[in-house]
Length: 402
Ligand SMILES: *Cc1c(COP(=O)(O)O)cnc(C)c1O
Figure (cartoon, helix red, strand yellow):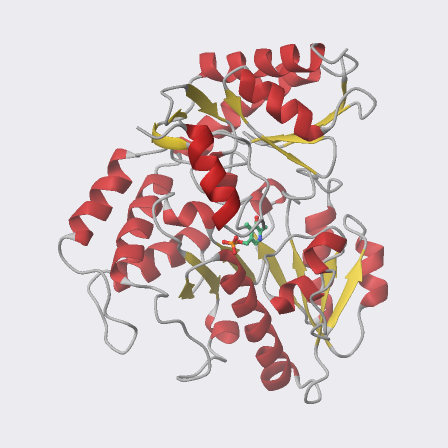
């Protein structure tokens, strides 16, 4: 059997260096635990950036995938297939929206939302041709396509990839005033993460989403919520917007929608918005394929009971209560909602990378973001005991640098 160090050697030579992974080679997983090729077990506190909200090898999801794999995997959208009706009506009911447009990756769903908003701007709002602008937030993360990195403020994500797509105005996250000032006659949409995940699990001030909703309604602008990471149970609700009782005009979904099995993304909106897209104007060979829909249907079924949302809320309280005790003990601040936390480590002690490595040595997999922030987002199936154990490992890892 090949050891992890041999495999990492090959990967580092033969794969592009667009990631800097922790030195662990995972072979199998169940629930919240993964096992590497050397037989070591780790508690997964990243959960595929919240793609694995329902756990590795979730029985309902894997069964649905296996059943569908044996029957029908791809038709292309040139034809209908028998899983598509349930997917659209199920996700429509979950979001409370009339219509669904399925894609594969999150970035594709964001691109879809941008195209829909622009077309809506021209055809419904009456914006002059090619003048539409979309307001976006500083420190956003919406994906990696050339258009999306055009409005990133992260120099690594953006630098060297110009020329950039015009039509975006970047404003400070968390400030409704900044959005108000940026609005003009050509503004068609505001694109916002209800909680900024990649930026370090940044929760906006109370009332921000509500006021943004009111402003968008008053100005006839679409509110687009990128719930790719925040949605589908992570924060203790189906959607993070629900914490403020806010309903956006368009939901952008991905990650957990594919149950950690296949990429499944979608935008959900009412007919007055999504209806602007006509045959031939947008699409994807794999978007809405039978396997993706069967997996998505299992995910929607799981979310319908509210059980995972409640579990994330309850375990989230346990997690945040324990994490708050670490403030002053090498931790500067803790943020988050539900089973999702951003932990800022005192940068004079260690980098986030060093803490991630120390955590790995203690059997916990987590990933740093933006220098000295550790993000914790375990699968929602995690036991309370394992969750508390993970926080103890974090406390111990930080203590090792003091
Ligand atoms: C991950 C993510 C994306 C991009 O999704 P991909 O599937 O990686 O393309 C977009 N927006 C948010 C908020 C995300 O977390």
